[in-house]
Length: 474
Image 1 (cartoon, rainbow, N blue to C red):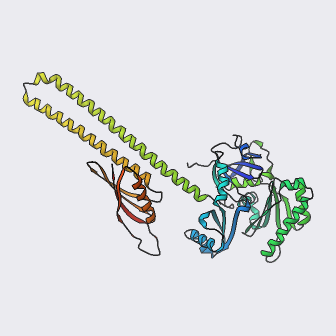
Image 2: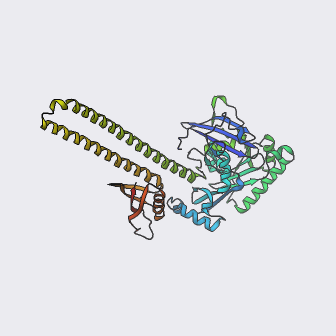
Image 3: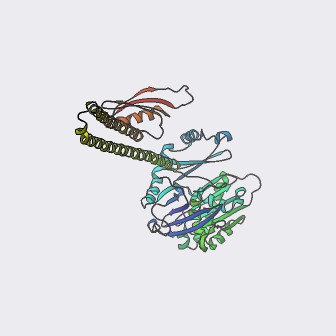
């Protein structure tokens, strides 16, 4: 079904620690209404924060997300009509899988086309886990865009700076680096559990992050004087001790705990452990549209297809409803006509003895009775033809694919059924053949066939296919 979203819930799925955050938008102000963390998803779906039927935006681990940035001529990068063809070409040349094997999305920064993807089988595991609890998955958002969105929404002045955000999860961490409209994401295998079990792990952690920075700047050296770099720490494992350990290693960075609620207003004096809900808040923000945030959803095409299926189902139900309504109306008319005929016949019988001597009058009454009987026969025939007509509409709506547009529907009556001519437009012959195949599978449709079609007029420009079908409804 298609829902108008009033609340936005981000669901951070982490190993052994799940967090859900609910945001609502009032004007230009975001308000956090609820949040909750639990060891497993089942404990969150209890009505306090999540209930069956709620729509959520989820993340998937950075380790299973592929992120690539391709430099293209500006005009070509921003050409929406050619973006899918460009992405298909780039994936064939540079990536180890086919485009149809993954969920993907892109965003354009300047002349860079940024491609984000995840294998379908891996993403479906997390989607099934959520939908198995009765929730609706409205989006799959990579951690890198969720972290960027929550930071840039709360700190919009950082869009022109260089910054990083280290999100420490339960058993792993993500390091996001931003430099002049460029993003990088680096996964780490150290998480909150490691930091709490070993006090010396804080310093080792900061040194490991430093090695990542050294490797990063070797591959992507900064031009000119090195600018001030803002470094934020968030997640379940962040603390003042973590900040202190990193300040000892990164002496030229501006290091601080990240506040994901700096510009988000708590509802009813809600007190939130803000550092631990940074990612789930970013996931919820990703469902909204702001000037500075990225609108990335890996299952965008999947949702569009689901909405198309819903529209087809709605059309089918509407057609069946109209068919039943028309049959009911014709039956009521038939009953009224039958009652009127009986009433006229009763009147004729009562007065027959008084006017039997008046033969001309008797002949007139008999003629009137025959006329009424013919009228009844006519309405019965019309009822049958109308029933077949509406049945034809319902069957065609049931069999056609979403890409086919019906332009004309002409029906001709015959003794045993109805001959129907359907004219429409399809993007290609494969869709017309699929439509024809669906019609042939229907037992109520006889001898469907193509009686006319057009060919594309250019080898370089694909145009729609005009077609005309003939079929019989029994």
